[in-house]
Length: 512
Ligand SMILES: Cc1cc2nc3c(=O)[nH]c(=O)nc-3n(C[C@H](O)[C@H](O)[C@H](O)COP(=O)(O)OP(=O)(O)OC[C@H]3O[C@@H](n4cnc5c(N)ncnc54)[C@H](O)[C@@H]3O)c2cc1C
Image 1 (cartoon, protein in one colour):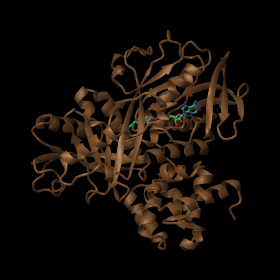
Image 2 (cartoon, helix red, strand yellow; image 1 turned 135 degrees about the vertical axis):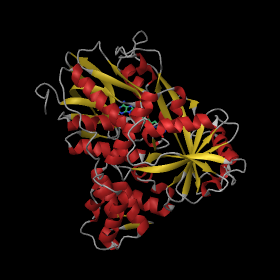
Image 3 (cartoon, helix red, strand yellow; image 1 turned 45 degrees about the vertical axis):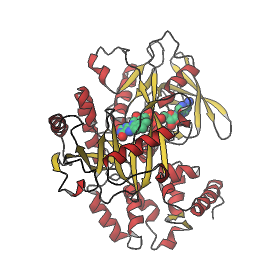
Image 4 (cartoon, protein in one colour; image 1 turned 180 degrees about the horizontal axis):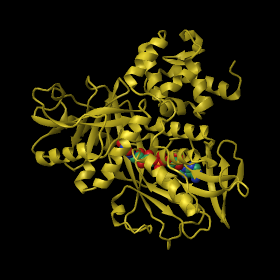
């Protein structure tokens, strides 16, 4: 609406509906741009639903002297905690220590820096622990005498993506899922973008003044399909690194997570998950092939079980694994200079590559973390506006995500409990965690569970599903069971079947 509409359909076309694409669409729409986002699958169907879900500074990056990156990530942690308190929450991490690991003084120093590098408002500082007497040590292997505990944040990666997309849409963006960008063509000072509706096979072109390619592991693929990344060009390469997690039935009581240092210098996290489970991950191995097909290997399962078994009294066997997931990190290849002249930027975890040889502005996003997506988006939009000779004020640091207008999550839960006395405690908490204040959109007016419409089984009611279809782009049952929620871990097969049938009816408009 603001800039180029006389000549083009949209100001900005964003390719990819992972956390970075959705964050960019939100930022740009909020600056008044007309935005079009295409996502080939479901929102967050790739890397952005496969992370360890830490919203963190990255304690281990301190070892590589990446102070700038850690400070920036810690600042983002505070912003996300403030703007999405239903999706991002503090978690204590226990770091058991023994003689074979990094020396205790080094860990103490690292934790001191971690505590003080960026303004820490809500989280507790780190401290030493006597694991022989502290309850956190009871489940650990006998050899651990001492340890440390520090606070970080943990969140819901896939829902963060959806809420960014939702905010973008509410600010005027058009978001098309299951629609792939098949070709980009620069025609003078505009982009012609060919898109394919995956379901219908229908192809069409749209035009945009600017393009941001946020296709994650496919970032180069998008460029290569449009002859925009020749071998001779300085366009970065991506190194695809697979990481897998296993989910096992809950191993211990308590909300604390554990960070287990491995002999190969990697770290494995053990995190309470979805009330009834424990999440263990991650692995790291180079990957070739289609990123969407990444799957855990028996070797990775064995590695994660061994990491757990070495550190804890109880044992995990491969047969205990109830679910696993794998994602592919699109790490940018080092060794190129995008022209900023900033040498230290080489140590940062993402690059915004400007396609300077094109007349119409375009940026490709290489790398990035869930934690830094807001900052990345802000930088990408400012940068592309600058390329177009325009400007627009950054705003996302101050505004909550949809449903995140909550001062204190615990107090919110109590208020909602009093308001919806008829909702069982567990279900109320799930609604509050998933939707924040937006839960009222499908609950207000109801006075009993019967008022929520058809009960599909377990804790799944029609009102929530209709909401997910209407406002959260849910189209297939896995969108609901594994990305909008993790109900897939909890429901019986009959509920999933009922849901599949109901979803079809809702989408066809035959739902009464
Ligand atoms: C194992 C693992 C653990 C991690 N843990 C953490 C963590 O704890 N904390 C943290 O901060 N970060 C973590 N990360 C990093 C974080 O998950 C990623 O940086 C982030 O999800 C990348 O998001 P993205 O939007 O760039 O990519 P993606 O989420 O992959 O999104 C790219 C999207 O583009 C779409 N697409 C591709 N081609 C096209 C096309 N032609 N047209 C339209 N759409 C297209 C894809 O379908 C995909 O949905 C982890 C990563 C991995 C793999």
